[in-house]
Image (cartoon, rainbow, N blue to C red; front, side, top):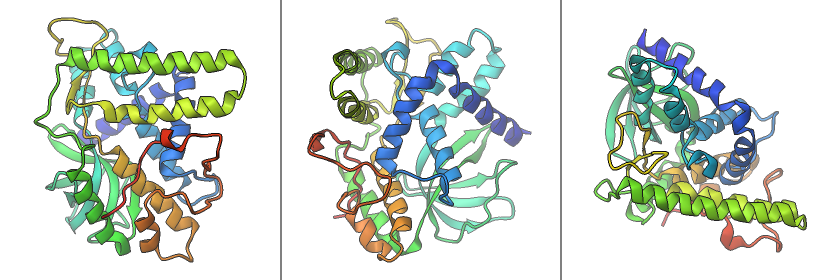
Length: 326
């Protein structure tokens, strides 16, 4: 019953994210996701899977504009849901705060579950399938990008998986080690007052919003300049320095128990960089996947359909989603 209800919540959140009020934000998010993870074509065999990945990126990780106080679609849903859902229903949805988007490795199969190792947090978890999904095709030691939800005391994977070749296992492991050593990774000990964090985010969002308005009003080089400003939004999730950021639409001294809160691990640069490599590996089957993953997100390869950096775009403004090993 819990698994079915968990799946129903995912479906409800997906439908909510398609509301007209998010239409413009969704377009920006899709462009950013394509830049960060590689563009897919509608005839690619993994097209549907990548669209599911984008959908959950938009719901749980993409930060909306200033009009939504920089919250995610999920946080916006929780905030607005207080007016139309019972406390018990809200409590069910709030369990999705604990999602873990990470790299996992299959340790072994059980009768109705998988035992996986989270390569970023280095922990073992027993994970069960939701009714509409299965773990068919997951081999031992398979490394994959997935999203784990703990719901009613059990772990479940959502339907977004990006499978990486076993041939690049050692490269991914090196990339994780380097990532954990770097400044991007959010250490749990580092915390910041939620009011200060909200002010800092709103200042950034205000700046980006104003630049976008100036470009729209200028009317010259509109598409290129707007794309440059859009790319800056990609770095916003990585400005979050609090692992458990409390969102609020006001400046209250005490946060309500029902103010949306999102666990934040800042792992998107690593995950998106590896996802980009996986698409390139598919595009260039004649090249050893090890070579492709070693290049990280170096865009020297000309991949059909993926935007190229030109002299009209400042390369320094591109989001650094590289996951290059040492």
